[in-house]
Length: 264
Image (cartoon, rainbow, N blue to C red; front, side, top):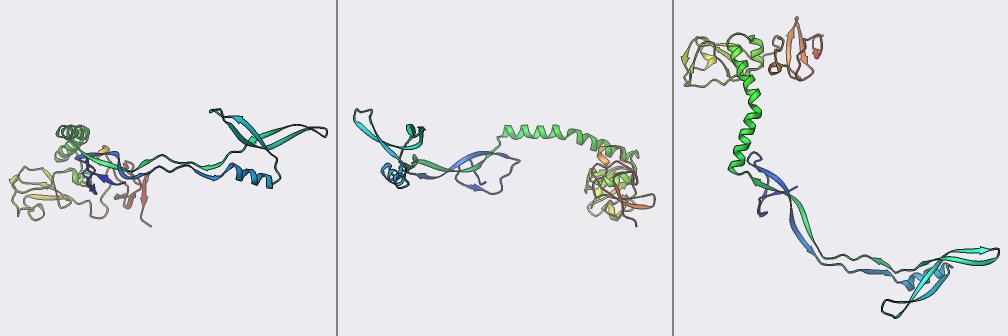
């Protein structure tokens, strides 16, 4: 379905749905003139066909609404007898076979119209999104604080590396701060103000690498909340064997349920 601006003067191909909404509408395409009724077969033609088939056709004359006489033809559909004597019959009015006409009409195309949000609507949506995301944000902050205090093991923290703020230059860091850098997790071991050329991967005196979730099969650790559960496809080692998670939100121990052993 095509999308247009509110004035329906311009087709849009990639509207920003963060800044506006779509509503159904119609676009005028073409006006069609009326189609008159068309007679396909007249009463007389149908009467002649029935008579050629051997059907009995009777003429009836009645008075029309204007007072004039109107001739009508009826075809006999059923004859009733008592013995050999005909006592009655059923008849059906013969009417001309017609193709219905159609009144004039306008043809429209179903479309969608992009309506930008007002400043008030954008603000309301921003607030609603913040409220909806608040529980997850609180959980993320709590997770980071617990990891920096050593209350979460390094393996679990590494699995959730993107919960941590990325490392940036010109920032004052304190010992035990955890930061993500190029997909790996690092712990600050000496307070300092970062510089552009003091990245965690080359400053062993300032940062210690905690782990990298991309490196093979990290050791399994028991999830402690919905924030650090294993996803389908996650890889771990446990009890000397390698495992792949078969489910999202996996909290089970490998070998018990939800994991595929990849060792032969």
